[in-house]
Image (cartoon, rainbow, N blue to C red; front, side, top):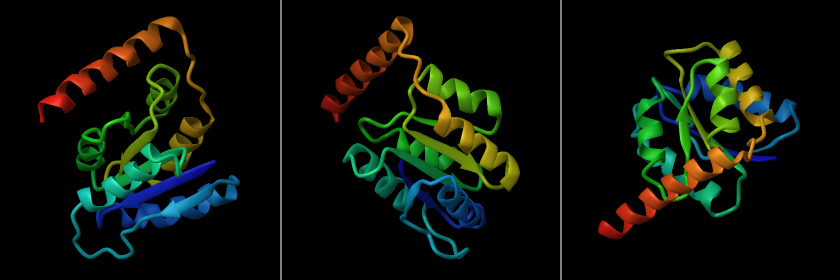
Length: 152
């Protein structure tokens, strides 16, 4: 699977652990930065990851900042992105199984590398259940997205 990854300065160190982890699992990684721990703006890294996912150049995206909150907010502004902020194993599984998320956000200051790796592994391995109720709910979210994108 091709995975796009981006981080701001608050997530840089964790990104540097996650990239080789993803590669060790056999995934191709597109790292959009940042490439140091100097202060940068998280939207500048969320958008390129989301563009790769919505453009079909990556199947999934990973975003890391200090808390994951800013990245998830920015990502969910992009049409076609369903980003979940996850810091536990159950949510990693549920967000794929029920919500078919295509981007995952995490916070380096919230979880350590071992937990982050396990969250990512579960998230990547969990298929969308495609149950009727889940598909219906995702379609409702898409309708909301369509309605409000026309208003802007």
